[in-house]
Length: 639
Image (cartoon, rainbow, N blue to C red; front, side, top):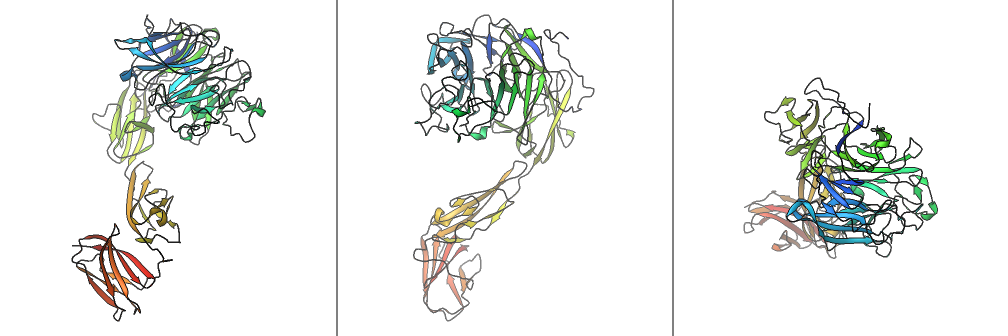
């Protein structure tokens, strides 16, 4: 087969509504758009256009058919220095671009090759052209005279912040030791809040914001050589970084969204997982290893080009995999993040076009999450495809605009299919087609099994299912009605049913209640439990903490009985013993204010009755004081 003149190969599905299960991807390329000069980046702004960044300082766009517009969207060729790896290197559209018109570029400035990140605006009268006079410079980073290792990638993360990947400053072996120097911007991942200040603010949760003496606060991660490129998973928010190696090892780094930054990826102490100049890292340094590395000796590989997690709707074999390529060999690889936390990488496309036909410098995606790759040598844009006719049938749970991948959901959850061009949908409930349910979304209104069938333009069908269930009603015990504020028996353990839920409220520490922390007053304690369907339900109970100044503990009071519960008009106390001191019976509201206080002479009878007709109905606190003994109990009065 002539790989330069690629033709798609499809395995025809024999039966509609017959699921086909995903296999390992076999990537093929389809020529999409041509006529560019050294294209090094592809971005979309949220509509059907693709914007192609040229290293010589121009940005062009093409439509959904790949037709390139003849006029550039932006021309800053007079501002850049272009030689070797220098030039206009990166582009990112603000998440609100279609409303505010802001976009950001990363280039090496003309006079000295310093790195510059700037904001521009679209022309207010022409959506197909930028305003070249609208530049707002965010940051300029000194760069050595070496032409290489400039970084250049910009991405907005799902958290809304702008991330920028810088190279280590160039030459060979990081001679200025920039990557491990945390008072230097080179060899770093930077994180900027472009909406919180002018020209930017530092996000309050950046990992080093509280240590300005040792770290620049913009730093999100460090120890990188030349991150070309990085991207975020649209669904999980995880960060994937392709860091170009020195002369032997190329690496893929991974930062789960829950980690919150601060990683040191090890360059130049290590190249991949292999020692390079280990003396440049202290023995106490905590380094993050790559999740995958490959050697230059394997089939002409020389330099990794990072890509994206595929979240498009056309190719099930690609879905959820991180796709990247080697610049020299043209070999595409796919990495899966497995459910057990491990990673598996396979060769996904070996010489998909003739060896002399492609130098793949960057990836991009359109607004449907389909992937594209640039051929910097021949000025072409290719669309990535898979050779199997298998559309994506993944079901996403849509919770207030946040998408997640779940196999079990709570009833009432909005289900969302992965959207793609030319796809049709049919939803089933418990194996039966739902009449009229042929859109890309459906609400799981009942408990049971929901199945989505997706058919593509070639009449091939794939399916996926989720189970919908109801909430588990939780409860808990271990919470007493009344506590003393100086109770020495601390903390008090609470027991949730089912176990594994979360306690909340004043005085809660993990699964315990501490009256001293809660303080005097009435407190609501809540236990929330999320079951395997994702349904969250809560159970609450109340307790009262009272002031017990001067009393070391609440004496044993098993002999005292209060009845009836609840009471109406009156209640009685069964003392079950003869007291030798005057006893005080008091009733307080839950704010601690007294509503009744009666002194009772030493007991000669076992039962005393008290009239509460004048007290409004509600929950109260009953206190019995006899000498140094105190007894507290909640009292419910009904009108």
